[in-house]
Image (cartoon, rainbow, N blue to C red; front, side, top):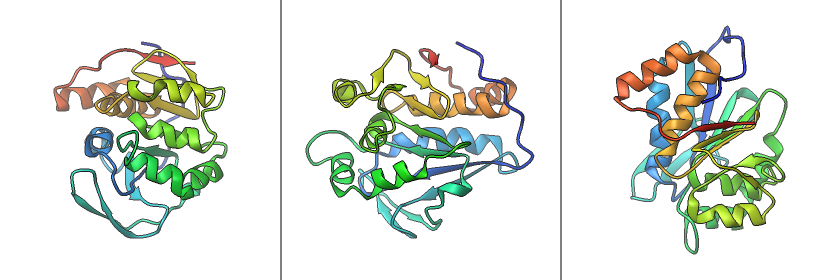
Length: 208
């Protein structure tokens, strides 16, 4: 596993926004949310956001989550897009067709912001034009479509290309969360999250 790029520890908490939308898969966001919760709010502040303002989101399994925080990408250091299945009738397909979230993600891109995705969430970044020519990955069922849309698909459970970080399917979101903790807050903090979760990272991080 490569060492993360040296980055100074922020004087304020790292601000992570997780984007939710109807049909989102629970494990796709629960993995990194659990990891970040171990770190503590003094070092990492996380929020659920939607592009539609404060509202109630219904997940794939019917769980209802209230998102109170506004879409505010300029107040985020990291934005994470979880997946929502793939193919006909999936939450991903609905959001791509609706177009609002891909346009918002495309407009959010700026220096200092890391855009990340879990599982098929990478396909929303692809729909936003953010993976074109970039090293990336997604759930195995969508890899050929990601490649066909211009993404440079590479091996790795997590693929870090600086301001674009993607991971494979479902449980890979745990590994993405731990990697981001290591990258921004250091290996000791990342090791702590593994110990608390009783989880050993799988696969590799492919860092461009």
